[in-house]
Amino acid sequence: MINCKYLAVSLVFHWQDYFATAHNLTPDKIYHVTVMPCFDKKLEASRPDFYSDLYSTRDVDCVITSGTVKLFNLNLFI
Image (cartoon, rainbow, N blue to C red):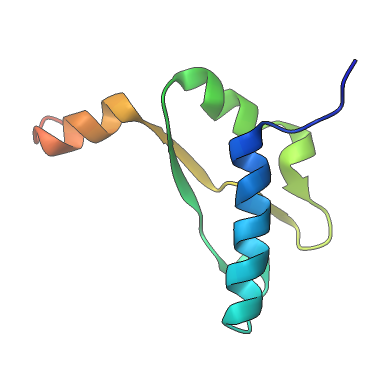
């Protein structure tokens, strides 16, 4: 079994680290929302290996799907 993270979530870790360093923050002070194409990515982002024990935070805090974004744009989301 290969032990690697989904590329987008791996990039999130590096982005959070860069942004946190640039603004004198720790990654747990950043709330990260990502738009993914399907619900499977929501489950993937909730996996235990996408959790930072160092900062007691998830790599991705909230995942919404592109379908949800479309509903927001159509003002149908309740």
